[in-house]
Length: 469
Image (cartoon, rainbow, N blue to C red; front, side, top):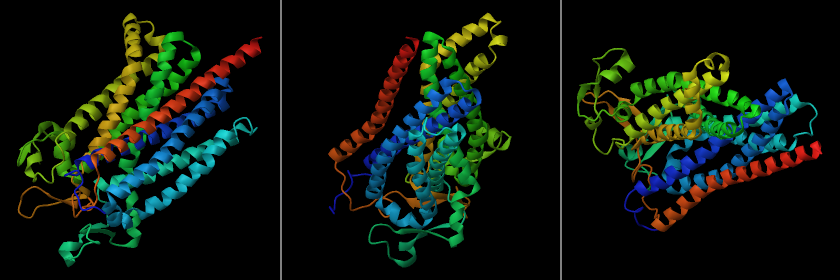
């Protein structure tokens, strides 16, 4: 243990942690999206007996396994980093998160056991419906795992009912082994189930839908690229599944779950609201747009971003990630996927109009690049908005100010005495090395998936030639 500061500030540690978490989330999202696509494609094969859906389901079951395997290994590295860099976090929040992480263990075991069973029994189980049920169980393990992990993440932004943050040093003059002054505990042992309260579920399903939207948008862009080149009907079949699903989920994400999550932020964290909405002023001031969206009027006043001290405020760039990345790019993704959905689902109607054909041609050619771009940056914007929005507190809670000022925001500070371990030394060269690994692991998963698809395509082409001969 070296008595030196961490690069002089927690900023570098946050960068390393943020990149690692986002990289792990990207692989977890890829697994959730691809295993769901495998199950959907196998269901369509059972219904139609079209070999295209069989090959698609088998391909994406293997790709999902690649993302799961690399993601699980990388998750271990991320967890090691969190335990090491944010060791105070583990010591003070252990009681709060023990239930979802205990349940996540069973979810992970389901994935580890059932996913290989699903992948290696293609063509070996004669009852296709039984094999499909095994796939559903494998997918359920992944989504159950995501459900529990996102429940923990949601608690960092919105304190669950019954969860208490105690400043041990103020209460007793002592702290936890000289590292942290805080202890987090449940008012009652049964309150541990409040990790899954209504507000947490809004956060959870918002995150799960984002994972599916991102993955399916990327896959749709790939199929769109090949469809424009060869116009094969099988690719159009796939696009008719992918693109409308992205459009529907994007609408649910924005108009339902996004609205509900906005209401929770409005009620529970006015400081985060001020940062997200760009209310860069001090004191109370009317914001007509936010007032209309929140209350249906144009004259409601909100506490501005600068009403709180600098050490409590989120970074100002949260506004950019929220509005430009998440909101605007999310809307654009909805426009592109919605327009293509109408064209693919109702070609007989829109095909009669020359302007519709021209628009469809524009949306197809640009969608190859813009759909994954919009989806990726909307997902990144949402993740950064959620994670940065709680800075510099976790388990945030807003209480009325008895002096009539802005609401009092309480939680656990990130710095020394809170989450940051004041005794840990993290040199720059190690930070750079970790960043390289964090970027290399997702790249490895994508490359392995590419190699499998390429090999599978050559195998299928050889098989077709042999049958033709």
